[in-house]
Amino acid sequence: MPESYLVIGGSGFLGSHIVNGLLNRGESSVAVFDIVQRVFDDRIVFFSGDICNEKQLVDAIQKCQASVIIHTASPAPEAPKEVHQRVNVEGTRTVIAAAVSCAVPKLVYTSSAGVVFNRNNIVDADERMPFPQSEESYNTTKQMAEDIVIAANGKDGLATCALRPAGIFGPRDRLMMPSAAQAVTRGQWTIQIGKNDNIFDWTYVDNVVLAHLLACDKLSLATPPLANDELGNALPQVTL
Ligand code: NAD
Image (cartoon, rainbow, N blue to C red; front, top):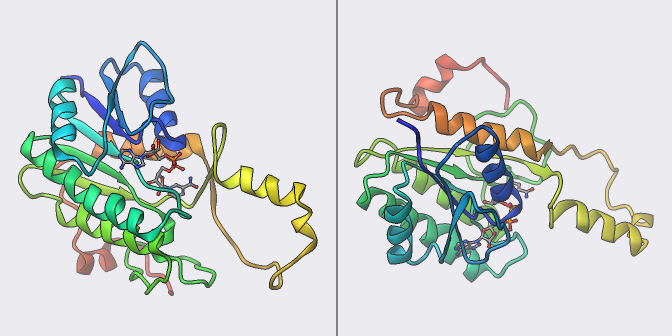
């Protein structure tokens, strides 16, 4: 039975690439739910809506008969904290409520490596690394959203997972590379803060897309995720 995909935030940088990835592998039912429309393609059904509005979500899910929801929507890191709280936390809760009420079996959530950002280099960390206290509302609300998504896994017939990309680069990036380029054109490269030895992960957008598509394909209630205390046995031992 072919899946029917609803990409929430599908007008965005990553979301639009996920849409392309789905179309390129021959998926015939791909829909986008977003507050703005930036992708225009006859093969996609577009739903204009806000993830904080359950009625709009339910309407879209029912109309496209979604069997997989990929939730990539988020305000930018520099948005006000009230917006982070509303969209990342309340919006994600609403996405789950809508998915459950429409009996959608799978939800893949785009979290962020920011959930474990602790201002230090992070080496060899895995899912067991606890969330640090963060003063940045983007990171805090992505932590809360991830908790909400993981807590929903296996309940009411819904299988969920959260992926944590670090910096994503590629065509249509409106955040990372444009701000780096702007710093260069403003001459801000002449100032160095620190020793220039911090490390950071970057992933090409197509690889992040692939991670999402594999998660969609593999996610199943039949193979429940390991509990945290089981992870220690399943994963190689690392020093955090
Ligand atoms: P983006 O801003 O390009 O896309 C986000 C999309 O979500 C936009 O189209 C926006 O209109 C939509 N959206 C925002 N609020 C909404 C709402 N209330 N209802 C419906 N749609 C809404 O961002 P992106 O860079 O593509 O990021 C996608 C996801 O990946 C986000 O969850 C982000 O936290 C995560 N992420 C991004 C990066 C990165 O480097 N870009 C790194 C790690 C994680």
